[in-house]
View 1 (cartoon, rainbow, N blue to C red):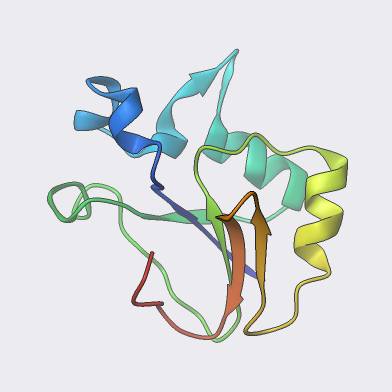
View 2 (view 1 turned 90 degrees about the vertical axis):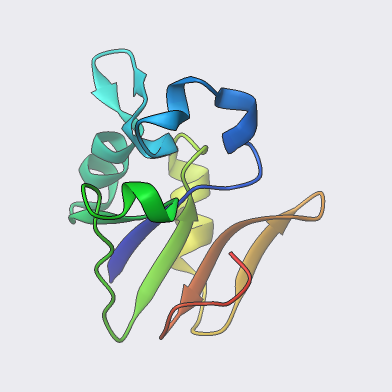
Length: 109
């Protein structure tokens, strides 16, 4: 499955750090959030970020994609929930989308 980390509604709360990078490029300890996701899911990830950052941080779309909120830090329980998503399903907590399993780029992220 293709992993895409998307900047979510918390991006503005992380300014000025997110002016120059996607949320998933912020370091938590020694690894970035992107590196943590790649390690847990054993797959490369790309970015869905602001248009002005997209040239440096490209988006890679395939037929099957997990769109995961870039503000999330992976853990075993969250990964289990994401892996259970079928195409077209969304994982939501408290009205906030955490992850989507989609075959194309959504309009509402």
